[in-house]
Image (tube, rainbow, N blue to C red):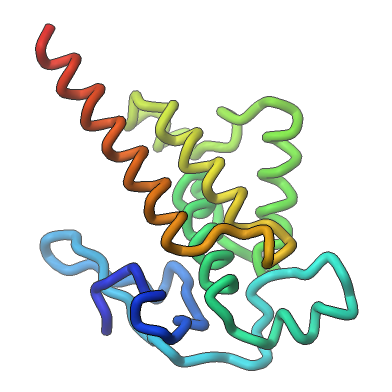
Length: 165
């Protein structure tokens, strides 16, 4: 099991990143299980082009891990589980966002618990970039990490500013 979520640094894609493969210890620190165990018949990202679907769906790459990480974010934000290899969840999220009802995407319990919807919207934007149907259009995991870190830093700065008043 690997604690490091920056799996690109290891030079091997995870290949089967999903919510059931992330375990938390007593301190709520994440550990990733099944690292490097790749399923050749499990398509983890749809390709818009049928010709590429077999090649892209069966070949586990870092872009597949980015897609899977985006699905994890969507599951966390919406409270809905990934089914049908994520196609239905991504289709639903994209349709709601396209209609500019973004807040409707979020799990109601999450909204009630967290008063920072701005950060949630930014995480949703990252997730949508990660689940892009075109693998080459997805950001690298290092870019995803930088975007998430930026959200956290902005949140910390807002918290410090509000504590001063």
